[in-house]
Length: 237
Image 1 (tube, one colour):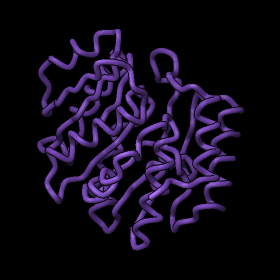
Image 2: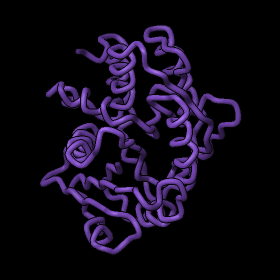
Image 3: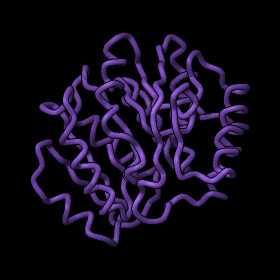
Image 4: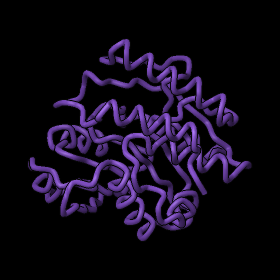
């Protein structure tokens, strides 16, 4: 699932990388949700690829959280019970090549696999010291308030889920409303609180903000405030 807002150039690079995947190449389906972009995202979505591409476009800009909800709803309509759902950002900062490894990790015994910035061997390039500080601070407080075995990176959106978990998530009609870039944290806290039996694993990866074409879409102040609110109030039912 690729939620996107004015990420045309980055999506071109991501699609090239998806076509090189090995373990999922024959079975992958990509859901691209266009959050009312003003660039040529719609145009590149019409091209032919080696994978099946589903394209959805919002009639107005609704933000990351609602865009992810739209994507999940579409995916659940398409998914079989044994399908896996991969979420990642559309800004070309996540290494597509490790999806193969993430899926293998799921096949071993995990229900969720997270590409984690806090595993030995992880590298984060192109991020300011201030952003590093905020990420480390969020990890510290989330681990105190919502500890769960093997969970260290609460806010990275690069994950693989078993599909039944997302079906459960969507039963809450208001879950994605009034949220934004904090939604990845809300999702993982909700699932680990609800399903105590979950087997979760993390793998190291290289996060490359310097590979991103164009400016970040994140409103940092709003994200900080929403993240603090999530820490205090929790993810709800």
